Image (tube, rainbow, N blue to C red):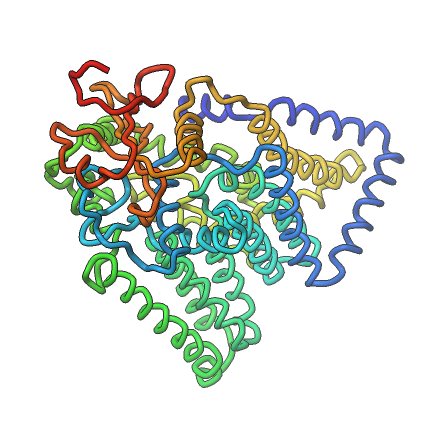
Length: 554
């Protein structure tokens, strides 16, 4: 508990919290002036939230504008994490009109993290994120535009979900919170964020109150579409959320008089089943093309070939495979050494959930104001869904904040609801709840902006490997011709900094990255028409020189 307290203490944004407290004190001292300001804000909010279309479209438009602003200031982000390169491979594959790429003849030299090379050359991850990135690459020339579009879609889906659980004003508040979070978190500053899964989760949870009151075919189709997105973005977490939503729907039907069974069958079950059957067939086809089996995911195939660690707490580790490259062996041994201890596993699950990732720390607020929320009968299902989903994530060995992306809409709904409860608080004969509501809303909206300013003002280190990789590749691309870069690592190389990643069509790429092995004759013979360069990744400054075998004079 002391460690968790220290972690929270270190991650509290004290300057913004101080400014919020100052606003609260000034509002209490200057009661009339603060009342006029708050009244004007609330009238404007009411006018904007007058139509449901405004509630849905305004957060999406805000996310797009903020994303384009960040693009204008900082440019598209550089991939740095293994997962990002893997997703970009999927995007390049789909943008090329292929489901999978054939195994390259020199795949042993091109082997890398989070990618399978046999029986096909594909990303190990589910295809939804890759499809979104491919849309950005195909339509606008860069995969990051897919991130931008997915963030906007998430904001619209979350606002639509909140309209089923909250009044229009509350739904608009939640949608704008989602817009600020999506535009200024690592979800928009990388290629492995959780906006796609958050969209699927919002569509599914948003259908619950609508189908419970007056079932419509379009709501059933949207719910099934949400399940399809979850199955192809975060399959395990999506399954947990889907089962919890199904349990809530079953309890509602058992406890109160609702639509007749024939109505549910005709307007809900059959339309949803049609969508899910088509999606299941498409997924089986994708699995067959990538792994050779319609029932085997690329993720499972990658785990069989490379990963000795277990996926869930109840599983046992597999025997370590025979790695062909020391860097890959170092990575998976590092994972087992650093993370496979009880304390690290516990901290890895608790810290991301409590570290102000979701809309300025909504989970912390939900915990603090949980007595109010438990007494609110309408929101008990959302608390149950959140508890089940977080428990499901706790059973995984490895957890990142975007693993719980499917419940982003649930977190925002609960956050807005406790803010609405806070708004009704009266003390000392004054309505301090209104002041506290607007002060906390200011804090929540400002926290992502402050994180964005830190990111924009941050200057990469002179020896930043991702910047150097992009620089070297751009230089060779501008010179024309085709090139092969052979990467030489030292024995103490950090496996988190991986240089060897390639595009989907390797032979057509102007620059190919490969690993140096003991015998490189086959690699040099296959790419004999290319200029061959050597990169010593752990030697500074990094530069390219004509390739010479290890031990030879340069």
